[in-house]
Amino acid sequence: MSSPHTQAPPSWETHKGLHALLAGLPGVDQVGAEARAAALATRSIKKESKIWAIDTAISMVDLTTLEGADSPGKVKAMCSKALHPDPTDMSTPSVAAVCVYPDLVEAAREVVGDRIHVAAVATAFPSGRASLNIKLTDTKEAVAAGADEIDMVIDRGAFLTGNFGKVFDEIVAVKEACGSAHLKVILETGELKTLDNVRRASWLAMKAGADFIKTSTGKVAPAATLPVTLVMLEAVRDFHEETGTKIGVKAAGGIKTSKDAIKYLVLVNETVGEDWITPDLFRFGASTLLNDLLLQRQKMITGHYSGPDYVTID
Image (tube, rainbow, N blue to C red; front, side, top):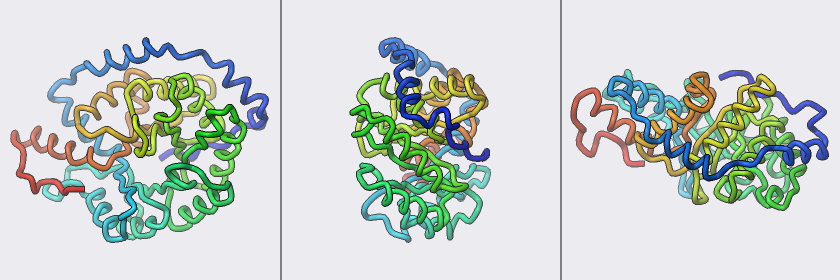
């Protein structure tokens, strides 16, 4: 993965400048965005390209467990699957990362070593309702335990009431607490209500130092959608054109099938280009998507599906 995105330059660290930036963003044509996303979703991929697309999608998965019943044993089993998704076919790529609660990072790192990334959801996930000191402690402890990626949640209450400076300052502080770890900023787009807000939150997060912007926690509906992801990708494209910095996008929540994953790959390719078709710049946050990718991969290679024991039940 490329080096972490550096913090925002001083000229953007004033709240006045931040408000001016966000107020000056063009509005999103919601009907147009939905129509473009729907049109791209109908694009077909040639059969010979589908196995490549499936392997690419597997390599972009952040294999996730974020349940109250999680345990070191459950996390370690998931990590074994992350390293070798199909033990019967070692040509199957590993996933990009595993994503766990901060207190289970050490258990994850014991299994994966340095072979894949370990992401931790910090900053009082999923609500984000905690003091900044607690959020920073949460982050630092996760990094100290071995997390090399932090998925933080923004304060949606502050954002929706126009307190953009508070949201910005918290991201900057968490970014500093990450040290060398990459920072993914979760917008929780299901609570932002409008595509205009999605665009504003995307720019705010990128200006504050996010390495990735992420759609959702997966705990709020709707989670990832094609129109929302399109708007985020357009923001990333425009940010790159303005600054030369490439920011990643993570679509998380509700993406369950290979067909869905391929739609997102087409969206990425058509919006920001081939440079983003890499785990360094695009991820799927998912718990069940990997199973369907594995089933479809086997069908493409062998011509038939295996029995129900072929994939683990997560």
